[in-house]
Image 1 (spheres, rainbow, N blue to C red):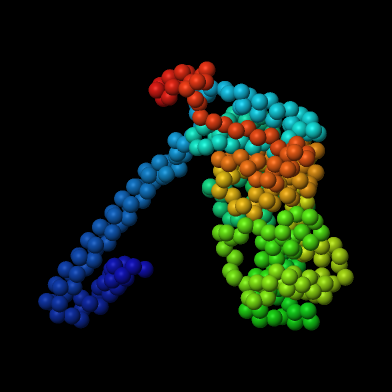
Image 2: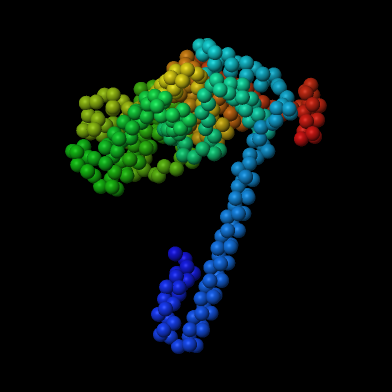
Length: 380
């Protein structure tokens, strides 16, 4: 209750008592104060109403896309060879997965038509293909591989209904989370540990699981480090600063803890969670596509804003290490940078041809459609 409302209620509720017990001159002063409070309350309500109306009128403007990301109307669209090639290859990949690119990369600087081309791709398959879309400029809470996969899965449940969603990923994720809680909150002797100790152990697991590739790839030949800038995890205790010591501590806890002891599959999940959870995530995507009888396309937009370790996860785990390429599932990555600027993507494309890159450039004066482009810009 505001101070004004309190006084107003107090004055209103004690009128009979005040009238019969205070002198006349004080009653006059009290009546004046009542009028002041009532007037102030009325002004406050009027100000709040005006503020609400202002916010409502401003909301459409706030939600409006910037001109840089607005889609060009069809009457102003100029088809380029690059765009035509993308649409043709994408259509072919949806009809016959084998031997076709798994990932389509639309790249180019701001304002060259990436959003427009993406819109035309979606329009061409509207009603025939299921689209899931993550925008790294707008979608919150996607800074780790697990959070990104969880967000995509949640979107699929909301869009297609829980009854049609296979739960390979959800089941594996819940198993991982519940086991992580036991490993962090219960001692090897089965006793509950202090909250401070639990937080410390949890921080070790977070570092080991998502950011330290010694733990993530102990059975693979993938690179040994991530770019950790902007991650936001708190600094670990002394043991966490030594990667070898951290790995040994985590492995010992997983081998000897009652929650995981003598359970090789569960131990593998806790020691290689990125690999195991990504496999389950890919299985869920494929199961969704098969259950709905149509292709499923995952779009990752404004990809230049994704953390570098998410980019590594995308090509190392989701694209390279799953069976998505032979399933009715395709990925579309839209951003300002070419994926092949990364050596890992270049090597993957050379070895398996899973990537089709479509770079868009601004119209040049020498191009045959430059005059038409200028005319349309003027007309707009």
